[in-house]
Image 1 (cartoon, rainbow, N blue to C red):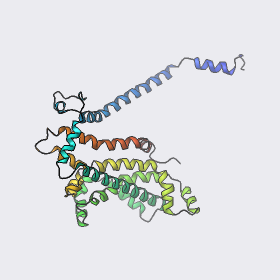
Image 2 (image 1 turned 180 degrees about the vertical axis):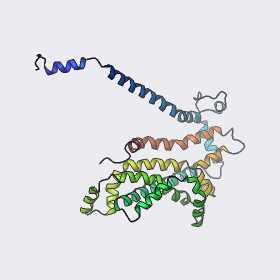
Image 3 (image 1 turned 60 degrees about the vertical axis):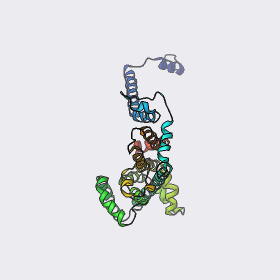
Image 4 (image 1 turned 30 degrees about the horizontal axis):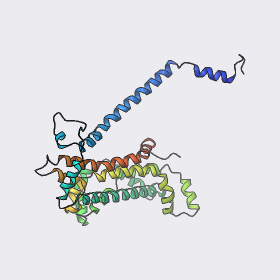
Length: 304
């Protein structure tokens, strides 16, 4: 009880009933405006994906109407049956394209995570001779467009005999300068005392890497997994250049096969269905890894 005879409970009740100040009202109004604006931006960025899903279920009569219809009115599954019919007449079944893309993408993702995390751990925590120079070279590689290196890359792949093989798509995509740089920023924030304590307990370097470093780098390699998956799954240029055998080609080339020819208009529904099937894995993977990817973008490292 205070000098005025009011108890603490009465004062707390009075504070709760006190009207909001003008500054607090303005602050709440500003945050409400920000949320509304962000909601509108999210809805706007979702429009291409919504249109993709809608188009995949449109009958042929709605695909070429003018003015174009954004939403499907009479949904149908005929586009997906047309897709299977189009690919059944091809020398290579559609499932083979799916297998090729899945194999190349999975190998690329695993290789990228292993090379980037192990290389960053070795450079930061072991500090080999010339590590600073090599890191400067990696930073310089970030400024070089990948299209500039296509001819030297082709000459190297051809000289080692990897043309017309899965390795021509996998090996050049494993070591990426940006991926290494991203993981290095995380590894730098792992305490050295944690690694030294593991060594004192008798852990070898690979055990430290597998049981200590990799769990701490989960946000980083989850982000690499998403980026590497999207780049490899949607890659059209590399299979077109390095693969001659039709049985080795990937889904982006399959889409080009479906949409080509004299019956392009008749295959428009099949192309829309194939595009949806090709986009779904990337969307699903991002939704699963969204929390860790956002954690990487916000913190850009591990809090010590």
